[in-house]
Image (cartoon, rainbow, N blue to C red; front, side):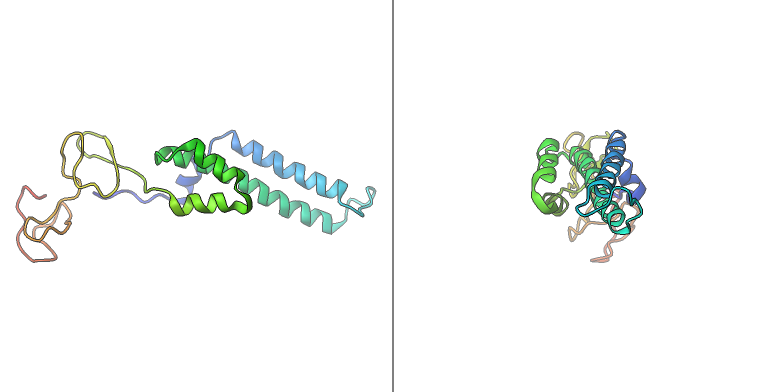
Length: 164
């Protein structure tokens, strides 16, 4: 069973819409704070490049962090991984280690049974609801084969119509 590869735009699309204004507001507030209140900064000289650069850099990091939290929240939900737990870990474990842990430990996306539409974990050979063969195997050597194969690429023996 093959699954369509997701693209970057597909992944970004799962971020909830309300997270974008929060990220933009965080960015704007941090730029304003750095430009207005950076120590040693003259309020009349708004052209100080150092405070603008620092504000834009910190604002960008925080905005990306907010967007990643929104992504983790929805991605954990679709992977059935404990949405609240992973969102809180990603938010409160310092130095973005929570985000790193999420991306290292996340489960693969579930697949869909072609017969009944039930979500099944990746790697299952049969659907637990209807018994449909998800990953056909060669009856002679047991290796996984694709549905349209006529003979097994591992042992060379003919595949029966039941295998496919």
